[in-house]
Image 1 (cartoon, each protein chain N blue to C red):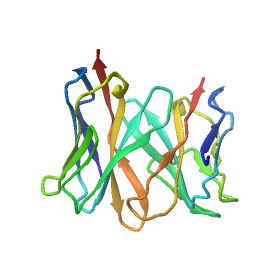
Image 2: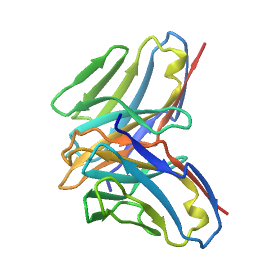
Image 3: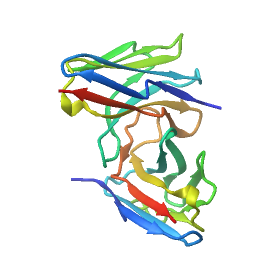
Image 4: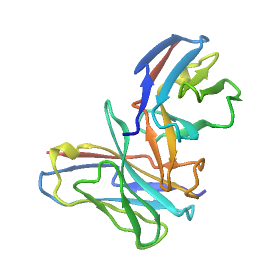
Length: 114
Length: 113
């Protein structure tokens, strides 16, 4: 079955270190997204991509970057991890950019910055 | 900016009773409203959605209603069961040349046996 996988599922890192969270989907979806989930804030969009070589900033993009070199992968990089970036991160994908297209989420990556 | 308010933040119901979760959106251009269920340690999963040209949609024990004039939509779960216990998120899709959702802050539903 096609799926979307995230790795690592759990990570503890130190302030100032660079961290990369991987996301891989096998649906051949054009659209991919990264969200963070925090208590009281729900899901907030970090970055998104409509296709290879396309990336766009979401509402909470500061301190994060993404790259899209192929259809299947959208890695999320924290350039210099901060304690405020302790969160649960969800990667997601969808087939079409048109409204009404289902977004499929990964299982999440729990990141702790100490 | 665009906003989706969701209430209540927590909801406890007895097994077999109904549960209602409400969301209000700010952007009148929104035209697609999905609901997601998130179980502990998992990612959110779509359970039902509604488009702005429809007032109500049902799928077995789950229904969603939309009031475009008031800019609010609600999730109704009837005959609740323990496996309905989860966090539920509403979202509104903004059709403005970009494809993204604005999510509500979530409702933790507990179904008491």
